[in-house]
Image (cartoon, rainbow, N blue to C red; front, side, top):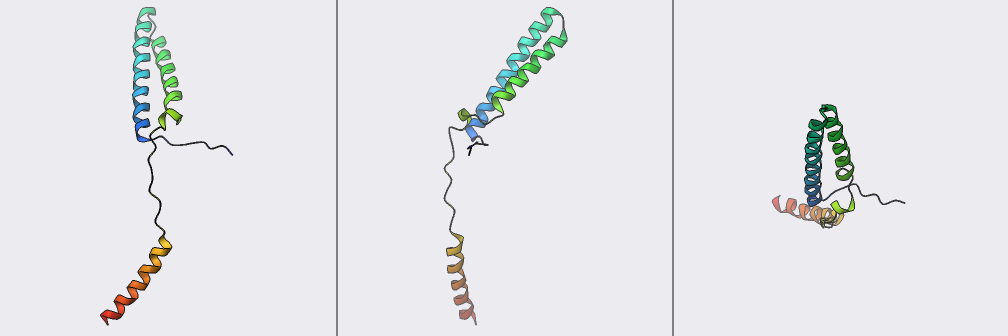
Length: 98
């Protein structure tokens, strides 16, 4: 089946944030200049909206460039073995107290 990754690592989140800010700022400046040139504020809004859509397509999905610094998780502790050893230890402690 498909192995679709649905997460970003911490460094990837920072990279996505920087890209998003850069793209929206760039499109905002270009839209403002173009809108002032043609004397249409609606053109500024359309260009800024296009920047938002482009930024969303680039930064929201967890592309592989945002998953390069994966965390190495520790292996889980076997709770069955731990609980059986702690039960036998608890019984010994109870007997000593009496």
